[in-house]
Amino acid sequence: MITFFLNGQEVSEHNIQPDMTVLRYLRTRQSLTGTKEGCGSGDCGACSVLAGEMHNGEWHYRAINSCITFLAQIDGKSLITVEALANGSELHPAQQAMVDKHGSQCGFCTPGIIMSLTALFENTPSDKTFTLHEIYDALSGNLCRCTGYKPIIDAAKSMKSYPGKVKAEIWTPSSTSPSNKGETSNEEGQSWSARTESELKEILAHHPDARIVAGATDLALEVTQMNRRINKLVAINQIDSLKTISEDANYITIGGAASLTDCEKVLEAHFPEFAQLLERFAARQVRNNGTMGGNIANASPIGDAPPVLIALNADIEIAGANGNRWIPLDTFYLDYKKTLLQTGEYIRAIRIPRREACEHLKVYKISKRIEDDISAVLLAIKVKVQGGQITAVRTGFGGMAAIPKAGAAIEAALINQPMTVETFRKAGEKASEDFQPFSDVRATAGYRIQVTQGLLEKAALEILNPESVSRVEQIFTTTLSAKDVVNTYDPQENNNA
Ligand SMILES: Cc1cc2nc3c(=O)[nH]c(=O)nc-3n(C[C@H](O)[C@H](O)[C@H](O)COP(=O)(O)OP(=O)(O)OC[C@H]3O[C@@H](n4cnc5c(N)ncnc54)[C@H](O)[C@@H]3O)c2cc1C
Ligand code: FES
Ligand code: FES
Image (cartoon, rainbow, N blue to C red; front, side):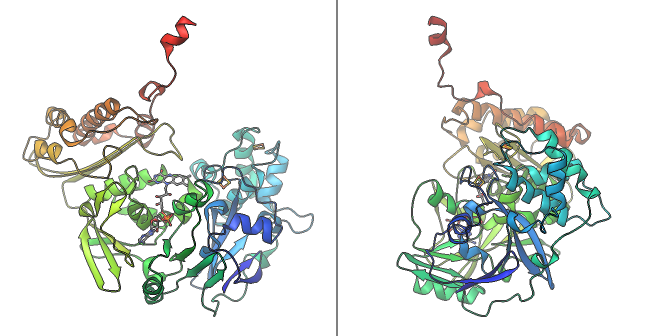
């Protein structure tokens, strides 16, 4: 039985298919059709709902994409949908502001936008206003095709001028920890919500074919986009020991199931360059559910965190029935989508060495859009510069090979060399020794090599002249232009026509 609160009311479910998404459940089992399905892939935000978790006796709510969240992940949580916001004719401030600022035309995106704005409103202390950056961040995962964003942003800006929370009972349901085992089953299969690591190990020992799910922001797409079925699924997002983030004198340690949103704060403090990358990692709803562990385990050649973690010399802790072991992340990837993880094993934690004196980190994501887009190339480089010499260097690249990996020849060309632009330019010449990238819709092979060389020079310029870097500049100079992309449209053919 899984138990959760839906708009303040406790609900228990047992007889349910394992890969049932929250969106489908809401619309077909609960007739809550206010939550819309647009893309079914986490890109449009029409399906946004709020998911609350209890911390230190208080519920904390975040917007998530219900289309790519499995019901098993909701066990123990409090779910709020658009239907529950208004109190009779008294609208929630997010709703009233959207009405008054004319933030809706066809209305399809509106429930999702309302939920994102509600999350922003409810998570901001009443005496604080929102910055424009916070508004953009809150809305970064919501598309509107017809109204245009200005009225929506105007609505966001004005929310604070409306009376505060309405219908408080939906936000603070009384009981918190469901006592039953978090399990569902029907003729199609089983799902579990593991609450401790020993429970997880036991489930995996008995069901080695069960798919682990953390945020589901990759896994759920197998169901919604590829039409595959998942018959056994074990959710790990309720296991506190996998969500812990800690620091000691040597390391920052991130639990395997800590959400990307939860990672932002610690990364901002220690590696702001990495935190800035996370701002461009999908959008808020995806980061609220998606995890660093999932990004690593998914083993995508274009995953954003692994190249940075490789450049930072991160280790990961792998746990299973036979015990735990730490391994350097750069040994984890064997081949395309193949890793060292054995059946029954999971990523327990990620450990990043603290920054040393004289160490510089540079991270560049090249993609066609600033937000909510996949990398064509990701370059991360950490260099230690002492007395004008490069005394240590580590790189990580995404989009350049079948796996995220370091550039050995590039590193060899940099180590023990003078810290100059010329050194980095020469190192860039080694890019095609390290990588033979392929061409696809995101970028050509030639472009990938060329941009790597350009980014290495840019890194040198910025290390030598740190004042030259601004966040805006970094964002705008790392967006692809159309001509860099493989073009299936033939201009010659067009000329002849
Ligand atoms: C709209 C959208 C935009 C996106 N944009 C980006 C982007 O900009 N950059 C990027 O890198 N990614 C992006 N992604 C992909 C995805 O969000 C990330 O890879 C995310 O970090 C996956 O984490 P998760 O917890 O959701 O993984 P899940 O989907 O839960 O799991 C992914 C895989 O990892 C396994 N797994 C998960 N956790 C563990 C664990 N602890 N131990 C062992 N195995 C585990 C699962 O079994 C599964 O095979 C995007 C996805 C969407 C839907
Ligand atoms: S329906 Fe588009 S993000 Fe869920
Ligand atoms: S109001 Fe039509 S898509 Fe936004």
